[in-house]
Image 1 (cartoon, rainbow, N blue to C red):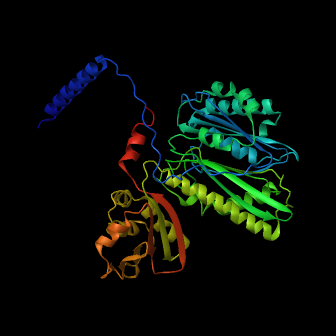
Image 2: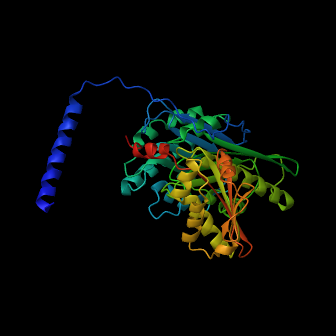
Image 3: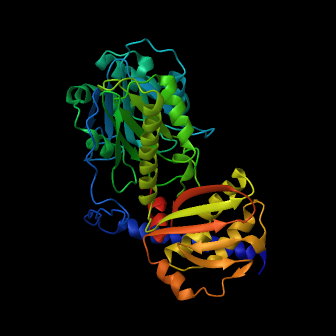
Length: 445
């Protein structure tokens, strides 16, 4: 067909579509129906009972940042002397909130300074230029004035749509109400206020027997989509009454990022807003965290970080399967990481899992494209305890029906032994379903 004919047909089709749109606009408006709330089938049965952390208070309100008829801003007040550490996205387009938090954590802190954290959902205040910087300053300054804190000790986070100016006046107008409502037992309410496409609030806890008393740890998180290492679309806040310096706390947080929040992926997309803040109030009756207690505390902190990271995957947008990709025998740590993430992020692997299809050939393909050193004749692939392939070929005793039966489970382990070395790595992901497309196609509508 001639080029002119194609253009004529294209114009005619556009005109026809325009007519259909005009007709649809003329139709009488229907009474909107409230969509039923969908909760991930992988969600825990209930929000955990988290311990009260001495020196930490929470509040949440409805500010109408984007959502209506739900709490969308939360505030945390931290006692004087609290040590704060953090980790953030490494995105080069990170939000004003992230840059502000990073700068404040690098500043020297007066010995008995208090602190606060304010978080809003519905708008990420990312890619908003100087307007976004002003919004951060206005929100944190308002909290500082209301709570009698140094502005440099007020940390903020925003999550939601990128590229739209944050209506910060809606938040600052609610700061007095937030300040008046602060209480120790409102951590679950705070977790709810952070949610965007999340289907459930996320919480985790641990206790450590310190020298002279018990040390408590409690954490909350939000995250569901745009999840990939460095970090993910996550906001995570962990609180403890442990006595420790900010330097020691930061070292523990940094050491445990790689195996926790940087080992999960829903869709391979890194966010602009990822923030993890850990606060230690020092109000436990236990002695300062040192020696063997420090090791136990770090292990407990890591367990809380891991739990929250796994809950983010269990709430992956549209997820029906929680999947561990367990790589061993790689030539080095970098190769173990490459293989694990190549499999975890493969749309072909993830859609096969969604369809409960034990298509192990897609795993082979993902390994091959990863860029890691591999030898076909040394590879072993397993579904749970089922050896699917080994020695460069399908395992002679493998039965397709066994693989299909295994895929019916909600929690899956795919093991890959490269047979080349001693390096290993585990990452966690979920399946890719039609629901993921629906959520993200309609995200701004």
